[in-house]
Image (cartoon, rainbow over all chains, first blue to last red):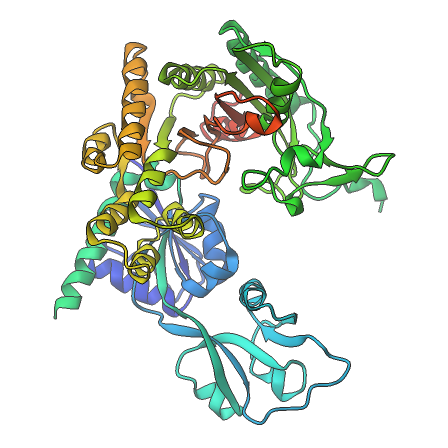
Length: 215
Length: 329
């Protein structure tokens, strides 16, 4: 019997994914997301679930230690990994945006390039390269909104859900790069070698989504 | 700490045990090539960068290790062996109309080879040059299957695709080259959503749009060819299917069909492939352990117009697959 290995991003995305799998008839009760364990197997060993950092999901799937995974489109764009992106799961929705201070700040003379603070350096580089704008990337790991406030950067590139954090920090969206949602990704070899397990799951989710769209 | 403990990132030492296993597998595979009438050759590890910088089908400069010659010419550590062999065939063996060549040598990737990040790996492969027929394609596939079996693997599949099938659809849709390239990337990721959005933007005809949207699902057993036949109204698509069917009928005679599956959405990212393309996969490895295909437009870049087909595999990947199957020792 083959085992299906699933990589889920710890947190909201994992909870939503598990709920979706449940709705599609998979028993996911063996996964205790609240515990400190990182790997869960069901009783007959047909499914294992690993809980990993969101930005690591593409890596686990690309290298084949997980056959399928659920991950945000933002993480996928940033990681530029070689895998199948098979379904838009419709949850985890937000937008990847450029935001800058409402009150324009005079640019320092010594700073010709636009300074961009972001958690997504690869995405930001590609975006500005396509526009022909020279930038300096300032890689931050959180609270990116601080960048322009303390003079660290001119703009930020970050995901925006409600926009509340931006408003509270005097920033406004100046450009929308793309919209983001959770995607089901599949390892390229697993789709073939474990196709008889993976294909029905994809079909079930599609059907469930179709049914939901009708309501 | 002893500073000699570190070697450059992405490289490895082969200690006696792993080396002897690697050598053993390479020798077994090479002798299966030689028994099939293929002659071993060797090209230099350093080449002029121009050999790999052919427009459209070459390697990106930023992916290659660069050095300079004493006269200032730009040299690279070869990222691929097929291109140097094509150069050799067009310049040193140009009096021969049919060439059956095999090789075993190291290739180098500045950014690390895609999957495991190795910057240096040993590739073993063959090139069959001067034969455009489906039987040459079949000969290549037979050798590919036999060499993997020779290496000790049993649980593997060779997936076959055809680049003309995709090209036919793109012509039918009236998409230009850069749009086709964008669609190719989406098909490679089976990202149907993006394909649909793009085809809508380009207002592609509905029936062709549906054909293209089905492309990422055209994989599976040989029966896939039947569902693909409804595309055959386009001559290039029809040619692609005919080619695969001819190849399969030969493999059937050799009773090798059990190793074959079809994936018409394989649109290999190596740009020099022009016809049949294939890759070997096995359940324990998340990436292909063998890749190959036809490249009829490559050799003419070096001075002689000659069709060709070939494949290569990375011995390290075979070692990993065997170890995961518990068959290495």
